Length: 594
Ligand SMILES: *[C@@H]1O[C@H](CO)[C@@H](O)[C@H](O)[C@H]1NC(C)=O
Ligand SMILES: *[C@@H]1O[C@H](CO)[C@@H](O)[C@H](O)[C@H]1NC(C)=O
Ligand SMILES: [Zn+2]
Image (cartoon, rainbow, N blue to C red; front, side, top):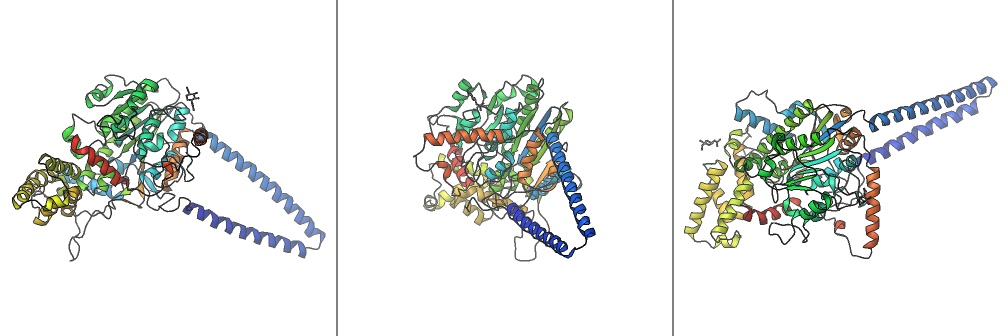
């Protein structure tokens, strides 16, 4: 990782402007002194004095006007007139190419006209520049810190600044100002995006600490009223086989007993609240998967186990509206289509289009809610960054490229490559085979042929919808099962002629979408991601300074207690590929989860 103190482009530009301004000031001063020396007559002197007085008065007038205007603007921002609801949506890892991909895919599957667009397309607002303080290519942690705190920070930072001091978030400030707050995601609720609104750690993988802060064990006490998503394993003590905590702390127990949380962990419990049949008691923590909620492509076949993003979002909206019924303040809700990013990391276009469609459906549900709500409300949606370097065309051969791609290939897939990879590992485990390369090489011809047949019939044909796998592709799958997820995804991508440039993130600008509404002009056009964070605070009329002060005081008092201890875990600045970490986590848990 590069130095966290690398100056941002914005700062460089300010320096340039400053020097340009002082040059012109010098010229003005020189001109004035020359005039003084050349002017000899009384008339000229008088004129000079009058001009000076006039200039003085004019300057004073302009200053007074400027102060008045800025004060006026501030008060109209700081004190919104009535009750307000703000729904901030994040499509993690979704760049502009994902929209073209999904739009055409949908038109193909549903037989729509070329002019048919997604709900998102109809609410296009602008675009966002995404770099972090440490890299031109951001990660989700720095990306979400720009939203939560409206500040640039380093890759890996969870609502922490480059100087390793915590920054108060819009959610925390909103809670203290009397708003209700919620987080809805499809990955672990402790993952970077939701964490950057509700916790402060130096490095994103400190999820054991994030979980505790999210339930209220921190300097600010409880700031979240509703959490829906995955990541249950971070809330279970390490003595529980499903746990992924570093310690034996039972976070669910602390949450319910010390902080009054209501806790649900499965679909039947979630369904009791569907469409307002029963009011959701707050605070409510609904954790529906040990890790991620499955990709929408797979979840459709496990609908009795996991709720979808749009279902969780609808229940959250209804709940927060009801809970603020008698209040002068509304709510702040962050909804994340978390796994668009994962489909990008896995280079799986079949999984990605279904993730984007479900996100689009959720956007439509939010807009419908805002339309029907009697309170004023705004929806702003954007991405933290693009993932995968997706391109909606791929040249497969040396001869001149074809101008086309094939949505039909994606439509034929009924499972994600992630799901099929887990199934393959499960199959190997069931047959007492390891996925190690060396063990594969030692299999007999017969065993290999047997395994190849299973892979082709059960996974490639049934799962990917591919009926023409080549011998090379099947050989790769049978010899390197540990990376089968990438192999499956490549088979789909090549046939659909969809390109990817990386298994990581890219620096391309991402889109902003909005319902429109008071103050949203501030994020029109091409803006810095921190400007979106500033908008969130302005719209709610909250200020994070006081929260930051409390957090800093708390950190300093704790630092005194622990002084003398070696380097904090949060001081680790080396880059860890979070996807590798994520995959390792999921890989370990996945086999037993199936
Ligand atoms: C958190 O709760 C404790 C105990 O109720 C209280 O003393 C403290 O002031 C609270 N902190 C904040 C920031 O509200
Ligand atoms: C989709 O699957 C069907 C049935 O197996 C097959 O006939 C068709 O060729 C497939 N389409 C593509 C584009 O792979
Ligand atoms: Zn990512």
